[in-house]
Structures are given as C-alpha cells and as structure tokens.
Amino acid sequence: MALTANQPLRREQATIMNRFDITKRMVARLHRDEAVIGGIGYTNFDLWAAGRRPQNFYMLGSMGLAVPIAMGVAIAQPKRNVIALEGDGSILMQLGCLSTVANRRLANLTIVIMDNGTYQITGGQKAATEMGADIVAIARGAGLAQSAWAADESAFEELIDVALREDGPWLIGCRIDTAKPVDTTERDPARIRDQFMRGLGVKK
Amino acid sequence: MPLDTAGPDRTWFEITRDVLKQHKVSLVTYVPDNVLRPLITLLESDPFFTCFVCTREEEALGIVVGAWMGGVHGIVLMQTSGFATLPNAIASLAMPFQIPVLMMVSERGTLGEFNIGQSLVARTMRPVLECLACEYHTMTRLDEAEFILDRAITQAVATQAPVTFILSPLLTGGKVFAK
Image 1 (tube, rainbow over the protein chains, first blue to last red):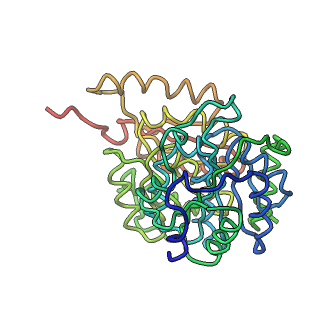
Image 2: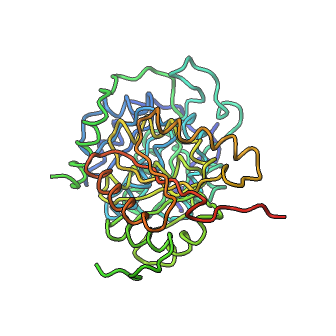
Image 3: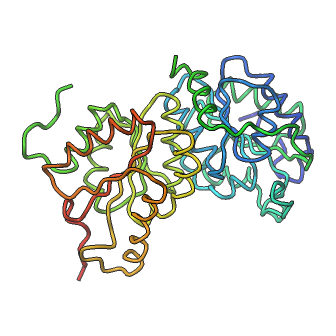
C-alpha cells in the first residue's frame, strides 16, 4: 500500500503511454506462466502482437467480460497469478464486477485498465473516462483498495512486479494514446480456448 | 460419492445439489431470486461449493467460463428476466469457445404471474434459446429432475456446449401473488 500511495491519485496526473509498448513490458515480466485475459478490441490485438503465449486468452465479443473470465480462472487456479487486460469503455460496461472481485478478495488477480478515453475501435467516440470518470477512483469505491494509476512506464513495471509478488486483488490504471494496434488477433475461438486450457495444464 | 440425502423424499433443490456434486460442479454464481432461495441457501452452507452473488448475469456467466478453462465446472443461477440479458454472452463467448456453461433459470412470467414486465420478458426466453440452438430442458416434475440434470450435464461436457435448465412453477411452486 505504501507503493500505491506514491502513485498519482488522479487520472490527469498520469503520463500518456503507448498500449503496445506497455503490453510488451508487462509480458516481459511474466515468468511463472501467469494467465492473461485480453478484453475485446485493441487491448487483445496488442496482447496478441506482444508475442504468443499459451497462457493468453483472447476474447471475441462479450464486451466487458475480461475481468469476470479472469476471476473464474483465478478461482479455479488459486496458485496462478491471473491478469485481466481491459479497456476503459469495456470496464465501464461491467463496473459491478469490481465489487465482486473486492468481495471475493482474490489474492491472485490483477486488473490492468487501458484508458484512452475513447471507444477507439468504433471511430473514437468519447467515453465517460474523458468526461470525468476516473476508473481508479471507481475501483477504490468498489472496495479495491490496492488501485493506482501508473505514473509512467517505469512505475507501471514496478506496479506489475508488486502485483505479481504480493497479495491482490490489484487494479492498475494506464492512460494510453490512440495509436493503432500492431496486429490483429486470429479469430479462431475453439483454437484459442484449446491452447489456453493446455497452457493452464487443464488439458494434456 | 455417498449422497447427503438419498431416497424418494428429496426436494428439487436437494436433488440439484446432489447431481451437481456427482458431476463435480463446485462453482455456483448467481443473481438472487426468491424461488431459488432454498437452493442458494443449501449450496452456500455446503463446503463442497464455492457459491457467491454477482451483480449481473453476464458477469456470473463470464466467471463460470473462466473457471471451466481453469479446470473447475460451474453453474449460473438466475431468474427469467436475468436470462434476457445473456444472449450476447452465450452467442459470443459460451458457444463459439465451446464451454459447457450450466444455466439454471427459475421461470417467472407464467402460471400465475402478477407482474406484466415478467410475463412479457419471459416470452423471449425459449425463442432465444431456440435460435441460438442452445440445449434446454424445462423441469416440471420431481421424479424427472435427477434424470434430466444428470443426463444433460453429461451431454454438455461431452459435446462442449452450454445447457439451460428452466425450473417451471410446476416443479418449484413459483412465486405467488402477494395479496
């Protein structure tokens, strides 16, 4: 908590970063087969572009469900760290799940929110996050005390390390730019699910 | 596994608990409902189950999807109006990713409904299930309950497909007009 207290408290105080760059930085810090759930759209496109991992799951549709899916994996495999990568528009659609995460006190769950203030994939319409909604403040209000904005890239890396090392749940807010994603996820759900289950050791 | 309650005198919710145990369905996510209350109470008091409330049915379904991929089978409990919020999550998550999500819906809107909103939304449930080609069973009789649950869960796992159990007021008594 000492560390999160040093992070900027408000969205406006966080540096604007690049989604692909910080996704790569995050993936580079995963050394224990952590599961990563990529929410719809550019969030999971850049996760795909950051390198294939059998422990990555890429959603198609079902906007807003990255955190619930990650919660399910975290409940089923309490010894594995699980990260939900979600966009600001997506989490705004399913804010209730933050209170469920808090109530369940899932020690192995980390939520990373990529916030560019827009529904970028549908043409850049403004999201509520660009009009005053602060996801980290909302998360704290929902009971996720360990929620913080990443001040910059090095603070983001430090927060990821802490989240993977210490008991969660954690929420890390990341302000990002509106750069296009680097690649597009292959839309083959049966294959994605099968590889993910093998990556988690559920299927041999 | 020995059943907690054997014999012909079990209620629909005791039968449900026993069949879920037999099939190692240990995760239960729900949005509250009055008819489901005895089942929820029973499952929450049994250490075999991880059973907790969610804020929306979509969220409850997403959790069960994630848990299945992590090696734990689960069921979502809800009422009819809650099911009406689920077509997108079933069509874009449970079905294409081939996840045997179990759904149990306590049926409102029929056989004595007093709320017009419930009776109107209830009419969307079976057409939605039909057009998604999602397997479902309406449970009306106590003597069929175990067979339906047991066989349908087996099929859901074998065919990697979701299944919905509709609990008719004929089975549960439903929710009656509070005068």
